[in-house]
Image (cartoon, rainbow, N blue to C red; front, side, top):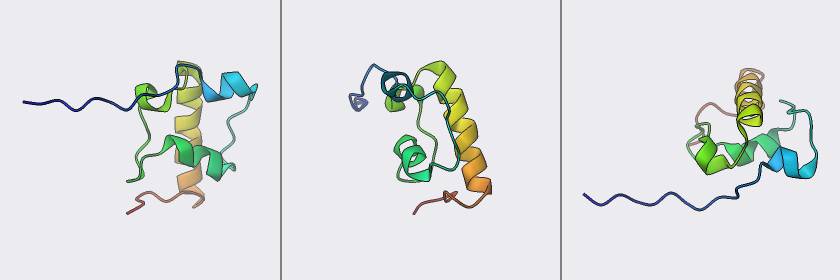
Length: 75
């Protein structure tokens, strides 16, 4: 079987590089970068986030979905 390669992502965390300390659920456009086209939360390998910010962004995405800022299913 042929395995597709994962897309190449940046090795540096977006939040660490830009000096952002807080991951805010109200920044829906920023959180949209870490969600797939189907509305699933992206893996660390694909999003390029460090473990600390991956956990915080996952919680922020879940909170934004609950507050209806992000859709649960995009398509």
